[in-house]
Image 1 (tube, rainbow, N blue to C red):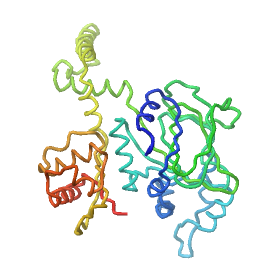
Image 2: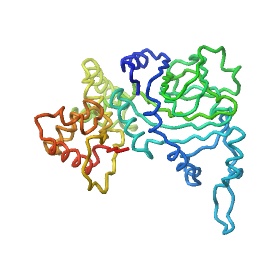
Image 3: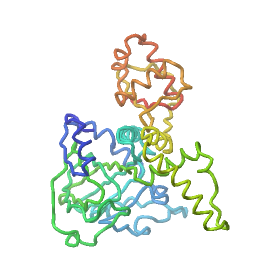
Image 4: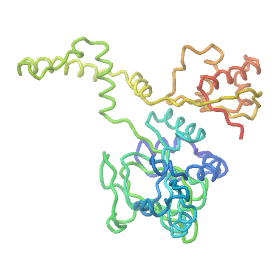
Length: 369
C-alpha cells in the first residue's frame, strides 16, 4: 500500500492522529484493486435496495424514481439512459462494503486489520464531472484513501472535535471553517485522514475520479474494558454473580465494590496481548472460496492470508499448512515462487500442496491475474 515509503511513516501518522499524503509508484497495483468491471457489476437495482449502492451528489441521495422504472413487463429496473444523464450532471456512486464483494479488497482489509488491530471495511466513491459524493464532513473513524483512477482535489479543515463518537456533515464549505490543507490525489496516491478531521473533495470540471476508502474502526477504552470483563467472568465466580434489582441497596453496593476490586486488580496488570487476541476473534472471519482448485499453482500465483488477526494459526491444520500459513502471515502474503525459497527445507511440491490445502479450507486467497 505504501511502497516505496517505509510503512513506519503510516504507523507514526496513525499514532499521532496526523494527516499523511504519500505518492507511491503503485498506480497499476491500485488499479487492480478496483477495475471498472467490478464497479459496473455493483450498479444494480439490488445494490440500490440493500444499500450497497448509493447515488449521491454532495451528500444528497438521488430520488429513487429518477433512475428506476418499470419495464414493459412491469418489472422494476434501473434506467441506463437516465443514470448516464445524471452522471453527466455530476452524480457520484458510493459503493459500500466492497470487502464483502471483492477478494482483493478483502485481502487488503485483512492486512490492515492484522497490522493495526482494528475493525476494517472498504467503500469506494466514483465521481464524475465536478462534485464529490460527500460535502464537508468528519468521520468517527480513521480513513486511508487510495486513489484508483482519475484525479480529485482534497480539502481538509482540521479537527473540530476530539475523538468524536459520531460523524458530522456541514451544509457549506464556509461552515467547515478555515482551510488547513489541500492537494490533488493522482492514481497511486495514498491519503490518511484521522478521525474528526473535516474533509471534502471535488473532481476537476469534466473529469472523473475513483477512490477506495479503507475504514479503520479503532479499539476504544470500552472495547478493552469489555474484553477484560469477559476474561474475568471466565476466571472469577464473583464477577459472574448477577446484580439483582430487587436486592437490598447496601448488599448491591458491597457486591459491586467486590467486583470493582477484581476489575481494578486486572487493570493494574492487564494481559494486553490476550485482550487484543480476544477482540480479533470477535470480528467475523473472512472465508475465501477456492472452488474448482484443480489446476497446478504457478510460481506467479499470489497467496494472501485471510486471518483478521496476526495469529496464532489454527492448531487443527496439518503441520505443513501451519508452517506455510505462519510464513504468509509474517510477510502479509507472497507469490508461490517467493514462498518456496523462504521455506527451503520443504520441497517445492510440498509447499504448493500446503497452499492448495489452505485454499480449500478458506485460509487464503489465490490470485493469478
